[in-house]
Length: 267
Image 1 (cartoon, rainbow, N blue to C red):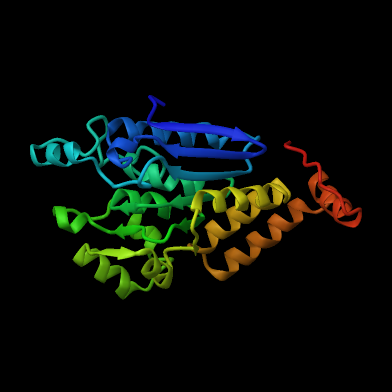
Image 2: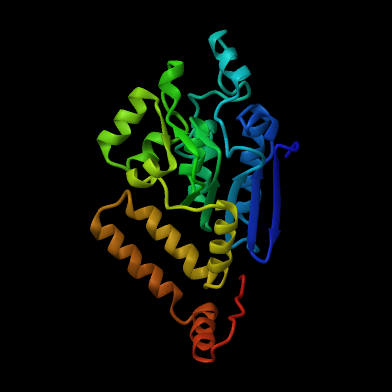
C-alpha cells in the first residue's frame, strides 16, 4: 500500500492506520489508492471480525492534499487516475468508494479520530459504524471554503446522523466545530481521551460475539436506513432463520451456559 497505510491483523481485529503524519494524513493519489487496497484486502478476510481505523501523528486526516487542490484549479481531476463521473464501484465513483467501502465491509468498523477530521477526512470517519473522538479534535465540512461540495458520500451518510438544518448550516458555512459539538449533533459516538485504545477495546469486545451474528446485524442495520418497514422486518426474519441452529449459534448458547470463552467457527 505504498507506505500510506499500515494494516495489522491480530486476534480478529484489523488495525488500519493512515500513515502520512508529516502531512496530517492528507489525501493524495497514493493515499486514495492505499485506502482502496486496504478495503479490498479486508473485505473477504474471514480472520477479521472488527476493524479500527485511525491516523498516525497529530491528526486523523486533514482532508484533500493541498497540491491536489491546486491541481484542480488547473483543470486536473481530484483523482488523476479516475473519472469522477464513472460509477466504478457499484453505486459509487472511486472517491465515494473510499468512504462507502467501510460501510460495506461485512464486519464493524470503528474510526478513532484525533486532532483533525476535515473535509474528506471527516467523510472518511463517517463511513465507519462508530466514531470515537478525542477532546480537542477539530472537525469540518470544509468543501464550500474551496468552492466545492462534499463528494465522498458525505451527503448520504450525514443525513442519517444529524438534523437536516445542522448539516446545512455546517455545509454552507464550512465552519470548524468541536468534538463536543459533533457529539451533540450526532456525528460522534463517544468522546474519549484515547480514542484508538477505546476503539480497540470495543473491537475486542465485538470479537467475543458470534461473527455470523455480527455480520448479519451489520447487513440489517445498513439495510434499515434505506428500506421500508415491510422489507426490513422480512430481512430480520430471514437473517434470524439463517442463524438458528448453526454451529456458531449453538456455540454461543453453550459457552454462555458453561460460562466459558466461545470458540467460533470462521466458516
